[in-house]
Image (cartoon, rainbow, N blue to C red):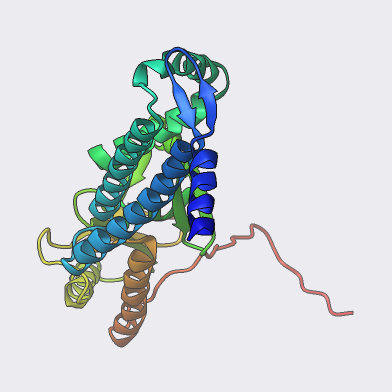
Length: 291
């Protein structure tokens, strides 16, 4: 019993060891250990709460962009509370960070402008939502689907499967084509040329019928066919139609189906799809010699 009391007394003396003793702050080893435990526990609790709330929102079929926004706000909010609790345990007033915050502001001004810019831009993207997770976007010559909007950059999966990391600030400072911002409606077209002498009215009728019969082509706005030009080797037509397509691959698939149908239907009706050809006229006599 005496040994236990002696050990407890020695432990109390060690924990009560003063590490910092100033006019404003007195810091002991016990306070440091308690603050460390509070920080670790707070971090674990914040992660658990974030995952639990995220799981329930996912089961409620909340959009991925809103899910990420709520999870991030929840995590950072809980971490602010944990930091405040740690400071209270250490007995450090917030005014003690006035000088440190000034130094940090100077450091940010010199060396962390891009990081802060991208961080703030990420919050703007999630709050304003000009680009959302799952959107199909076009940036310069790159097309792909947005998979995640992180603190510093946005992850985009290109159409060829390669991942691209784009700084968040770039998405706000440059022109971005968002194919699915409001809806997934888009207009596509198929161009073709038929041989001279083909029945142009019949060509238009068949093209409209082919477009209307495709299940992906919507009825309103209805498809249109234009006799566009008298080409060098063909009568040029263009079939324009609207469809639901959330990616370039969907449009290509529909256009491919329509081209297959055009080839089959025109062959049945004896309409020739033109190809480049030239007529050569020779003035004078032509003598063929056989060696």
